[in-house]
Image (cartoon, rainbow, N blue to C red; front, side, top):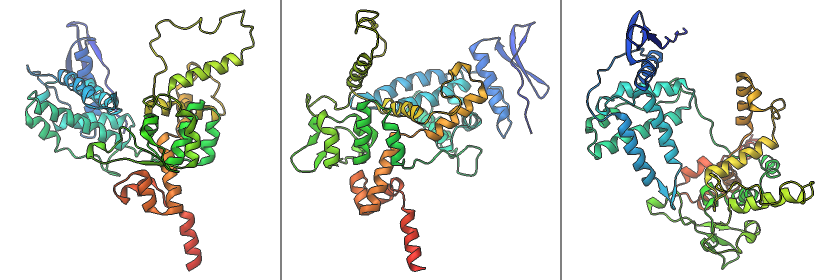
Length: 416
């Protein structure tokens, strides 16, 4: 059954905003104010949830969620840091807290309980987000309340009540399942390499050969590589499991050495793969392809923005590395109808079709690690894949190293 969404309205006599639900008028406060808009969104989110429970809270003088969010976000930016760089976790925290603020920003933090927690979660289900992403986002909100309890900003009972809400279970909720990360075929990678900047293309080749994590490729420096034997060993200055006291060593064979060799002639402390180097090469290629004589039009370096807000940095982040690959995928696998149409000229249905096409034809750096793991497991066994990928247990490696169906078919053919 389709539920009609009540409108946000103005009561002219009082100047207040109101919404009418089930024949009952609920006044929200001054019309067009942030508080009235937030309260309206919250009521609609509760109306669209399966429970369809609409409550009108009585505000109390207390630390509001807006203030708790602000304090926790400042803490998160100083806590989630690795190698002097803010990690992707901060972006996840920001997205989760933004949704919480939209629905309950002015609510006293101590009054935020399981029912309100479920309202935020239901709004994310209605957005069409995946089950795992929703569970991760709700865990970030719980962590904020745990931090607030430790800082004596909110009572401990506020965090403890949120722990009573279980995570979404597969097949038992309305949230969709996200796509499982799998390996990417080598022919797809080769087709994409032609459209990548030279530096990023070498990053892809190296990661595919060594099975590294994307972050480990981005932070590679000459001083981190032992080159005494015929097989080099790369020890990242920072890695995913260092907080658990584990070491990470990545063996680099002859093919990986060949890709890496020209990036080692630099200061040992400088990153091997730098966006600024890639930008210099891009400008040089554009200049060499220039048709207009140098005496006409702009000369090299004359049309630069003096104080640009965005400049090419000294190292790639995992996000910029991923975006470079996705842009190359758009060029390697263009949409048959909308590839050359400006986004502003596409209608909503066309935007959705283009987005679905891009999702189906994009691949990410993480998939290169899956591809390397699958090849190593096929040729040398699960234990070898475990060592190269740096996993403590083989059960983790099995997630990355896909089983070889062809081998199973061969066994079945032999045993009948």
